[in-house]
Image (cartoon, rainbow, N blue to C red; front, side, top):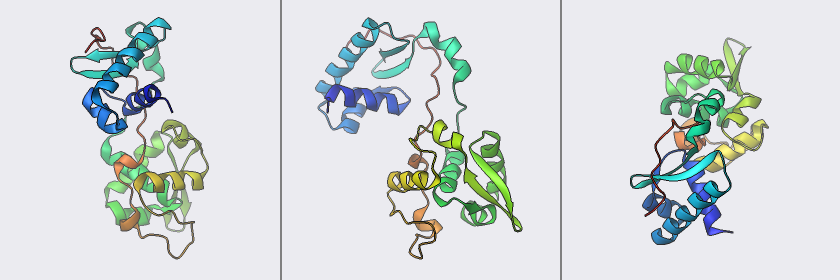
Amino acid sequence: MSERAIVEAALFSAGQALTAEDLARTTRLDVEVVKGHLRALAREYTARGSAIEVGQIGSKWTMQIRSDYAERARTFAPPEIDRDLLKTAALIAYHQPVLQSDLFDMIGSKVYEHTKALEGLGLIARKPSGRSLALTTTRYFAEFFGLKSSNREEIRRMMARNAGVAYKEKGDPAEPSPDESAPSPEALPPPAPVPAPQTVASASG
């Protein structure tokens, strides 16, 4: 596996500017090695005339849309989701199908606002089930968060792995309780909104 590719993947996945030290901790590579790969990546992206650039902003590095393309690309950027709403999305993805009444027991009255917002974004579906609503993720959920599968069980499996909990098939009596299995907000890979155009300094240092 290429070290440079690892640095590139880490910078892409971050969705924000990071220092070389941040990337060194993430990739477990020496910080000077990381700096060398960042400078090389900056040159490579420039040489290929890519709409994406790797550049340095102060002491941090970022992968972003080149300013020439940013305005057009922003039209297709997914909306951002705040941390609290992201946690609710993670819970639904892991426990689906889950009743809204059961989700209320996990997160309280904000369940109504959150599920309405997530449905508005096209990330979940709400269907009547008895005196409550059954919540499931949509096909767009996987696309939005960059997951490789839209299959519900695959999403649950990935959520369990990312949240660090034991995966159990639905209906398994040993399935973790909501408190034990609730994924953290970090369990979901955040969408990658197009950053606002920034002035990128020369890729040195």
